[in-house]
Structures are given as structure tokens and as C-alpha cells.
Amino acid sequence: MSQSELIDIDRNHLIHPVTGFRDHQARGVTVLESGRGAWLKDANGKEVLDAFAGLWCVNVGYGQESIVRAAAEQMSRLPYATGYFSYGSEPAIRLAQQLVELSPSSLQHVYFTLGGSDAVDAAIRYITFYYNAIGAPERKHFIALERGYHGSSSTSAGLTGLPVFHRNFDLPRENQHHIPCPYPYRSPVGDDPETLIAASVKALRDKVTELGVDHVAAFCCEPIVGSGGVIIPPKGWLKAMADTCKELDILLLVDEVITGFGRTGPLFACEDEGVEPDFMTIAKGLTSGYAPMGAVLMSDKVYEGIADGKNGGGVVGHGQTYSAHPVSAAIGLEVLRLYHEGGLLENGRKVSPYFAERLQAMRAHPLVGDARQRGLLGALELVVDKATKRQFDPALQLSERIGEIAYKNGLIFRAFNDNILGFAPALCYTETEFDILFERLEKTLNQVLDLKHITQAVA
Ligand SMILES: Cc1ncc(COP(=O)(O)O)c(C=O)c1O
Picture: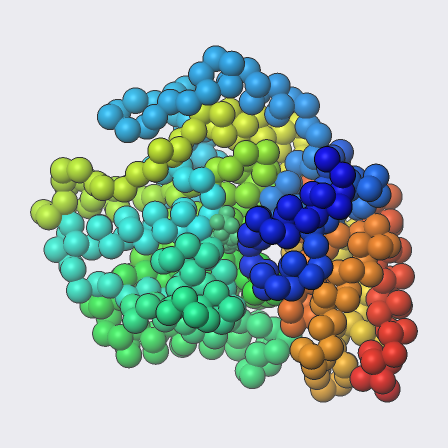
């Protein structure tokens, strides 16, 4: 089928995630055709360097043949096994075991989902069930961060703290609340780590007091706010929030859908701060995007409450046809092997200082107000004026223009609406690939600066 036919069919029939329907129809789809390592080729044969690992998920890079073999073997042996009626499959059981071994020791039980949103949904449902089961049915309120992202299913989107996921969807629900996120570059309390941490702890305490301590179920956060603009809290923030949850006797759900699987250095960001949450949600890097799969990991305390609580026991009515899918699980096992024995976690840790150095050097560019990074997760924040940190007028549609120009220059990254550029290179990146990334990025920013209306805005 020709390119233009594909584009027309897409325009007429395929709904894309998080787009304006008319904007997408006007722009048309960019069809991607193949990938190898950190590189993608589109249907016109153009090679582009992917600095975003697909959607911060293809952590092992494209074209890993051992994953393809693991999937094909599992497909030919047993393409599907239901988890209902107490059936199961070996890869899913082994993957659950490995995840329990590799994650914080508080987490002992795994429910597999199809991705991140339904992992968060599952966690919310289990938390609700748990409190009802243990005889605390008034604990119904959930607290999350402004700018946090926890998915776009009908419940998780309410925990998400980004207005575009609420608008016209009648969200957040009345039991879903948000507190400010610790944003060193723009926080009204400044960027001092201790002050920022203290402000977050106070905001959580104040919100719990406002709602009534016996009415709050859980606090939910990402260790680093991802889709909200790669906002990196100071070291010690997650631990302080975890300690506060313990003290207030509310559950902690850490959403590691982006930060998991080597993205920030360790396998999970919780490791860095010795945090032992009650729930952890994962997806993306679990299968590195080679097939859909997510999971929610649960503590013994909650599991036991659900199993034996005075109103618990009996059937827990939560399930999906494709929970613990054997092909996705076989892929997950091979992906975990590549992170460890395959040396990818180690490579990610080895190259991240170079990524950090090159990213920080971008501060010299006239458009760059802030550069931030942990491991292989990074962002540049573009501003009109570095001294005042003034943002560009959204009417300029700068992020769309940046994305287009970067693609022409053979580079993909995420240009968020508020002119934050997000980077999540695969763990297989080499220093040479980082050189290409930053050369193309600098060229892109120079071309953006040369656009007449941008030159005028920064003048
Ligand atoms: C932290 C976080 N949680 C949940 C999700 C939702 O995952 P999915 O898109 O797989 O439903 C995402 C997706 O980007 C995410 O970044």
C-alpha cells in the first residue's frame, strides 16, 4: 500500500492517543517501519535517532533477536493461558518470582496487567477492597501530585494531575486530590532540597488533616514526575514522603512505570532511597515495549488483609482476559535477562554521566532555562528569558515546531506542551550516539531560535 493511501486511511479511521482529532487529521501520520538499537526507519526510508525509547519504554533498544525468539517459542508452545479458574503458565509464574526478588522486599505479590493505566487502576481497586475488607470503609480518599501522570483509564486519569486528562472527562473524582509537586526550577519555595522536601511533607500532612486522617486511603506518586515534564525532586524526597505515609498510617503507591527498569540507574528508583512501598506499579520497561504488559506489586500486609479481612475472603472480582499473558511474560523474562546478564543496566549506568554532561552543556544555549537529569531520564526547559524564567506564549505552538524540526534533523524526543523537552534514551546508547543526539539537538534549537516569531519573542 502506498504512503499516501496509508496516511488517508489513518486520517479517516485510526484514533491516536492524546491528540486533537482535527490537529492529527491536518498533520497526518508518520509511519514507522523498522528499528535497530537506538535507530528507527520510517516508511520513506528516513533514519532517525530515537532519544525517547519509543514512549520511554524500549529500554533494551529495537531489534533484540533473543526477545523475538523467546516470543516465537512461547507462541508456538502455548500462545495463551488464562489465569482464571486457577490456571496459569510457567513464564508468568517465573516472572512474578523474579519481580518479587528484584523489587523492594515489602512487595511479595504480583498481579499482571496490560500496561500502566490498568496497573494503577488495579492498585486503586485493591486498595479500596482492602480497606473495606479490614473494616475501614470510610478510607476512600486518594492523594497524588499536581503534574503527576498515572495513566488515562477512567480511574487512573483522575489521579493524574494534568488538566488535559480531566477536561471534558468529568475528572478528578471527588475522592481524588492533588498536592503541589516538588519542582526545583519553578517551586514558589525555591530550589533548596530541604525546603522543597519539607514543603511536600507539609502539603501531604495538611491534605490528610483536611480530609480527616481516617478517610484517606493512599498517597500515590512517581519517584520522578515523567509526563508532567521530567520534574526531578531532590534526593531524599521519596523517602520523606514514604516515612510520612507510615506515620499517618496511609498506604503508599509508587508508580514506577517510567522510572523502573534501569531508567534512573538502579532497576527501580525506590532502591536508591531504600523505600518499601505498599504498592508499586510497573509497565513499559517490563517488556521494553516488545508486547503489552504491566503489573502491580502488592505488600503482604495488604494481601493478607484482602485474603482474610473480616469483610474480605471469597472472590476478589478483579481480572482481565490477558492478565499474566504467557507471551508477554516470556518476553519479560528475556528482557530482564538482557538488563542483567546482557549488561544493559550496566551500560545505562556507564553512559549516563556522559548524557548528563552533554545535557548540562545545553544550558549555554540561549533558549535553555533549565537542564535536569537522573540516570537516562532528562529534560531541558525552554524559556523566553533565563532571568525571569518566563515561558513562551502557548499560541506560538513552539513544541509542535520543535518536534517537526527535530524530526527533519533525524531526531526524536518528546516536546511537551510547556516547552519542556524530554529525553529517555535506550540503555543500549553509545557515547557516539549521544554525540549525534546533541549535535542534532543543538542544530534544532538553533533553527528554532532563527524562526522569526521566536527571535522576536526572545529579543
Ligand atoms: C508513571 C506512569 N504511570 C502510568 C502510565 C500509564 O501507562 P500506559 O500508557 O501503559 O497505560 C504511564 C504512561 O506513560 C506513566 O508514565
